[in-house]
Image (cartoon, rainbow, N blue to C red):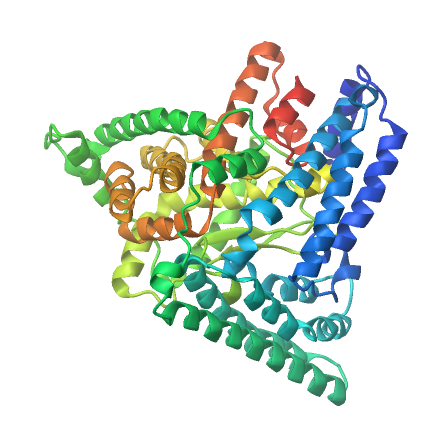
Length: 578
C-alpha cells in the first residue's frame, strides 16, 4: 500500500504541475499510440525485450529487406512528427515529441551513415532473444518452449544474413563476437536443453525442439568459424576496419545517444577538471587513513606514493574468489534497509531483485549488470547479473578482487542495484509515457546510477568510513577516466599503452580492470561517456532545485519525481521539473 501511495503522490505532484500547462493534446496522443503499434511491428526483437510477448516467436532477419523496411518507417515518421505544432502540446508531450524525432533521426543515421551492421559482428547474437522467451512469468514453460521452437526455425537464415552483411569488420568486434558465440552455443546445448528435458512437452515435441536447438547452435558455430576465417586471411591485416570512429562520427553519435545540451568536447574538458578534483579527494582520504595503517610513521612527501601505500592496504580487504557472487547477494538487504530508513525512495517489495551468475552468452562486456523487465512485462523477475571469476588465472583473480574489494563492491551494488539501475527501472516502468520508458536516454540511465553512489554516501551510508570514501573517489575517478579514454580513443588516437597508464597510474586501477576497460573502449562507442555526462546533469539539477526551494526541498520527492519521467533526457526532465 505504501508503494502505491508513493506513486499516487508523485502522480498528483505531476498533475499539479501540468495544471499550469496545456492539457494533453488528444490528437497527438492518438498519433503516438499508432506510431508505437507500427514501431513494435517493425522492431519485434525490441518489442519482445520490453515485454510484448506476442512478438516472442518472431526472429527478425537482419538483411537488406529488413533495413529497407525500417528506413521507410523512419523517414515517414520523421516527416509526420516534424509537422506537429508544438504550441498545441503539453510540456510532457513536447518531451515525447523530442524523443520520437531523435529516435527516428538517429535510427536512420545508423543505417545510412554509421553502418555498424557492416563492421560489428557482435551485433548478431540471439542469446537475449532466446532468454526473453524462456523468462516470461505469464505463461507455462511448455508454452514458452513452443514459441521458442517457432523462433529457432530461422536461426540459420539469421546468421547467413549476418555473414552477408559484414564488409570490413573490426578485429576487436570480431574477436568479441567469437567469444560471445562460444557462450551462446553452451547456453543452447546446456540450459535450453535442460529446460526441454524438465518440461511436460510430448516426446515428439521434445525431439523436434532439441533438433531445432541443435541446428541453431550449429548455425552459431558456423558463424564463429566464418569469423575466425575472416581474421586468419592474409588480406585481413590491411582489410579490417579500425575500431576508432574519428571526430565526425563520434560527435554525431554522441548527439543522438547522450541527448545533452553539451558537446562531447565540453564534457571531455569537464572530465579533465573533475579528474584533478577526484585525485585531490583521494589524497585527503589517504592522509587521514595513514596513521591507522602505518602508525606513527610519517607519510612520504610524494602524493602518488602516499595514495599507493594506502591503496595497497585497503584493497587487500576483499572476498574470496569462490564467494564473490555470494558476497554481492548478501549485501543487497543492507542497501534496501538503508534506503528505507533514510526515506530516500520507495522500494516496491513485490518486485524483488534476484542475484545470479551472468549467462554465458552475455559475458565479456561488463562484470555486473541488471536485466530488468520492460514496461509491458512488469511481473518478469529482475536479475542482477554478476560474472563469476571462473576461468581467471590466480593472478587475474587477485587483481580483480583488489579492484572489487569490500568497499568498492558496496559502491558497485549501489550503482547496479539499490538505489541504482534496479530501482530506476521499477520507477521507469511506472511512467505514464511509454515513449519515455522505451526511448530512454543512456546518459540518464547511467547518470542516475552514478548519482545514487554519491547521494548514498552523502546521506551517511557506511557511517562515514574513510575507506569507503577513499574507494568511492577512486570509483568516481574511474567514471571520469571513462569519459577521457572514450573521447581520446575515438578523437585523438589514444594508444593502449597511454590508456593503461591513465587507468593504472592516474586512476589507481588494477591491471585486470584497466585491461577490461581498454577492451570495452575498443568495442563500444560513447557509452563510456554516459556515466559522467548524466551524473553531472542530474547533480546540477538537484542543486538548482535545492537552491530554488530552500528549506522546503524534499530529497525523496526530488528522487521520485525525477524517476517518474521514465529516463527521458535530463535536459527535458529539467524543463518539466523547473
